[in-house]
Length: 242
Image (cartoon, rainbow, N blue to C red; front, side, top):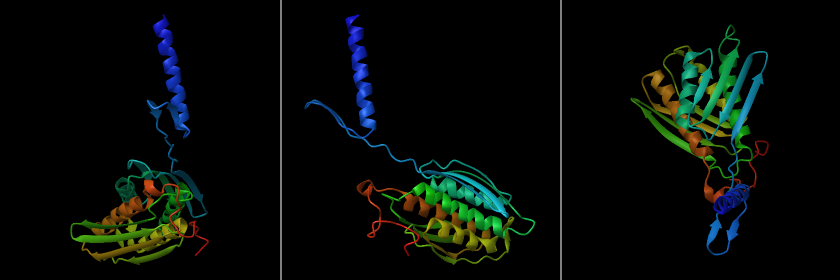
């Protein structure tokens, strides 16, 4: 009986220690037992619902995910590219998009880029501790894509990629630049896309989105040495401060 009471008290003490530790405190019992200070990481998630007279887009984003996705758009090849972006960036993305395709694809493709940029901006918050910049060179058979990103509050796109066909699957390749322009503007980032080599338009576009995923993964990753620091000598990253 006495033994069971003693163990019950020990379990209560352990629960108290864990609670204090979870809120960032330190618990010490002299020189022998010390429960280390821990800190709860902020969940970098967002939900965006963007509705206009032209499109209706909802995105749920978890930056610190495992690459799970559930994406629905009426353009099969665009859906495939966004799935690839989630998978290779390890972002969890749930997304549904509809638009006025009876006009053309422009509004929907551009607005998908806008909404995705908004989702990342909201999820990153004050951007403390992030690497801020990221880049990747991605080969896909005969194609090679180069993508660089700087989430520095200054929206700017450099896009140099040419395609042989107007359509790849159902996707109008002419609108890829508009997708990345929308993303860069609404995240507040410099985005550079280069395609120096390639024969197949499919390979070229897929290499771009995989490089884009890896570059964003690097830029959004955090450095434990600077976890409380905003990565700017200005002390803030604000897209209104160009």
